[in-house]
Amino acid sequence: MKKETITILGETISKEHFPILWKWAKRDQEGLERRIQSDLRPSEKVSTLLVMLELDLEEQELK
Image 1 (cartoon, rainbow, N blue to C red):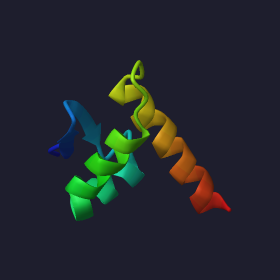
Image 2 (image 1 turned 30 degrees about the vertical axis):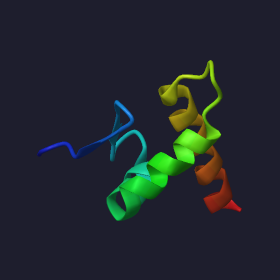
Image 3 (image 1 turned 180 degrees about the vertical axis):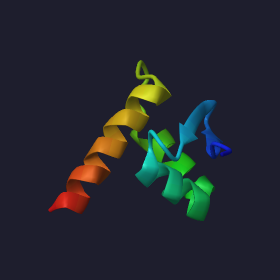
């Protein structure tokens, strides 16, 4: 089975590890990139922000 991945700002998003962000990227990759760029702090890594955003979105889905 082929793993599906999408690259956002140099970071790989896989369906397995970032299911919510992966779906978002499939629908609107440019929108996700804009969101990440607007949330990214100067000293923060993109990978760190991806993890935090995925967890925030997951929490919102559970509410």
